[in-house]
Image 1 (tube, one colour):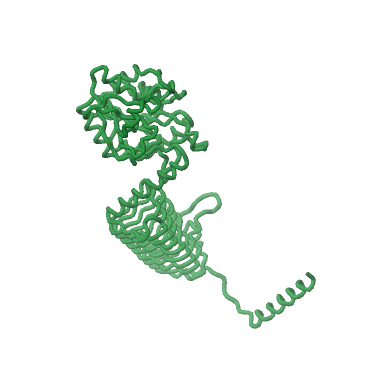
Image 2: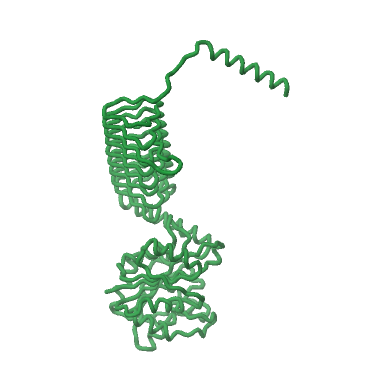
Length: 450
């Protein structure tokens, strides 16, 4: 069956106290909107419609960056959830299949929950996602009769008996696209808020002889983010879930609570992650690797059996092959390191390729930027780069070559050659003592004058 996603993302989010649209506030390195889109994408929708409003330009850019095929529609006035969904009608005209309404500020709906909603839709005209609330508070209540959903009552409009119900409305709804918009056309705004409630379609559907039901999920999936405090709570929830999933998948942690995941972090089983490691977006770690303490990884790939850190930084474009070692205070950016390469101390390798089994000594820098453009450094296999070597790109060091410590390499080094690029050392006998005496005399004179 064809599936269309309608994701509501028009709210301003006044309680966030931010100029950034609410749905663009990040969780685990991605806007909340992207989390909602990723959850819905597991259903392989043929259409995705984002209903934007406040900060529409920024919201549109974020949505299209994640899914260039998404359609953006505008809700220029905030008149309720049914009014928001109605803005997608033209974009979905003629759609043959189901539509699912999601919310850009509710980032944790799980794919399996959406799949259960799709399955339930085969037997009911409208399906609502509900949850049993520990504290029902001001949530809308789901009034059930057996497995049939009779109606949804907003808290403001509920009597005491209805408010006693703890089965609550998440706002997520699935229905045949044509039926959804037909029901919305009949929604009015005769209620305490004067808004067009999407929830009213249940009563309308039942009056028309259509069936409705509710699928239950864990309350944590329905967490909506409306304030900075709730954003922090959502971040903590995501991190706890990500760490637990990693452990279940065979990842080993020394101090899991100190490890920070991005929304798309992928770590293979058997990998050891030490304490205080940060995974920014775009990281893939293969099996049996070792990420040591206080390392920061972003936009990189680490192959099986590699060792990173401690205190290492892998930046976007870093590609580490099997059994590579990147040590303390080493930074890698846009560089490929072949199998067995070692860069163990205090080095920067950027815009480069390092061949297999090459050893790069401490303090080495690929000088890749001339102030205007970036240039490439090519280092062959089994090369020994002496400590404190400056490789001024563009430059190539051939296989089995060597550079002397402290060299500035500005020309290509042939395979098997030793390159020395440093000034000749001169020793001035006794000069150090004379200089110390002169400096001490100057210091004493300055102290007396002070």
